[in-house]
Length: 487
Image (cartoon, rainbow, N blue to C red; front, side):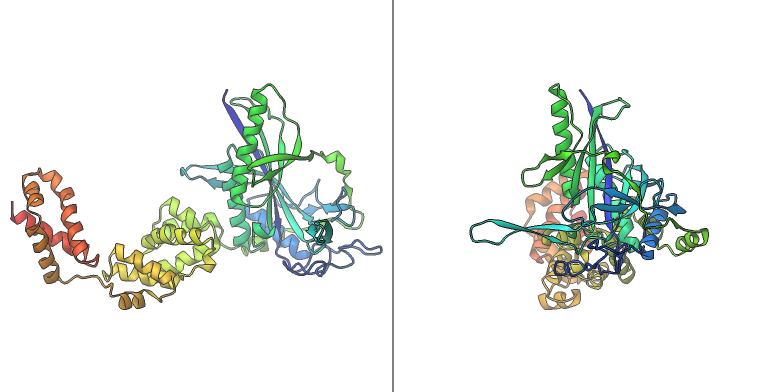
C-alpha cells in the first residue's frame, strides 16, 4: 500500500512588543520569575484589559506579507480551560473574527521545486505562563513553581490549511514563516527561547483518497530539526497501526527527541470543549483603509522580493538567492561581501560553502561569525587579483576564523602570497618534466583529446614543489607550451 502524509501546522509567534497584549507589564526574556507581571496578568479582581495597539500593527503587517485578507473588524473571545499557569482560567484569543484571514505563501524545496501553502487564518491571543519543576530537597523530592513573566505576552497563531505532504515541506513552510516575521521585525523567531513554537497536525491516507484521515496533534515542537523528525516518526506510527488493522485515535501527542518517538499527552479537544464566548471586557477592534494602506506602503523588502532582486542584480542562481535570503542577517552579510569584493558569485559560493560549514561546525549564527563580512570580502579580493590561489584561500579563511587578522595580515605573516613569476614557475616546470620521463612519453603517445586530463599529474607535482603557492593559470600556460614542444 502507498500512503500519503497530510500535514497542517499551527505556528505560535511571540510578538516583539515591549509590553503585553492587555497590560503594561514588560516582556523581557530571561528576567527573574514573576518580575514581568502585573495585577492584570495575575487576573486580580477589579482589573481590566487594555489592547496593545502595536500588537495589532504587527499582526496586520504579517497578514499583508502573507497576501492575506486583513480583518477590518476583529473580536476577542474567552477560551475556557484550566492550567496552573493560566491565572484567569481562560485565554483571551480570537475565533470567529480573527485579524488575518485566508492567504498563501510559496515554499521552495531542496530539489528546486516549489509549491503554495494556503493560510487558513492568523489570530491574536495572549500567551500563558510557565510551570517550573525543580528539585530542591536533598531527598530528591521536587517542587513546582509558576513563572508568570510570559503570561499575557502577545502571540499570533498562524494556522495553515492541510496542504503539506512531507516533513520537508513542513520544515520549508516553517522556515518561510520564520523568515517573514524576522524580516518584518515583529519577532526574533528564536525557537530555543519559545519565541516561535509549532504544533503539527499529522494524518495519513492511502494515495489517491480525498477524505482526510484521523489526525493527531504534535504539541510545542521547538526546532526545525525536531519538526522534521517528529512528523516522520508520527507518520510511521500511524501507518504501522493502520496496516495492522487498527485505527488512529484523535489526540494530542508530545515528541520525545531523546527516544525519537511520540507519546500520548491527552485526548484532543474540539472547539465546543473550550466554551468560547465573546469577551465582555473588550470591544471589537476596527482597522480602516488608511491604516492598512499606510502599513502596506511602509513594508520592508521581504524574502521573495529580495531573492528576486539578488537573481537580477547579482546574477545568482535561484537556489543561491533562496539560500542567502532565508535570514535577513545572512542577506545583509552577503550584500556587504558582494559590494566590497565586486564578486557576487564568489561571495555566494564562499557563504554557502566555507562560511556555512564553519557556522554549522561551531553551532553559531552568522551574527556570531568570527569571519566578518569585511574579512570575507578582503579574502575574495585577494583571490580575485591573483595574490592567492583557491587552495591557499581556504587556509587564509581558517586563519581569519582563528583570529589571526584580516586576509592581508594572514597572507603576509604566513608568507602565502601566490607565485606568479614566470621565471620561477618555468624552472619548476622544467624540473618536473625532467623527472617524469614515463609520464611525458605517455603524454606524447596519447590522443589529443586525452592530453588535457593527463596534464593534471604535472600540475599536481608543480603545485607540490611550490607548496601550493604557484599560480595555476601560469603553470598551465607554461606547462602546455613545453609539453607540446616535445610532440
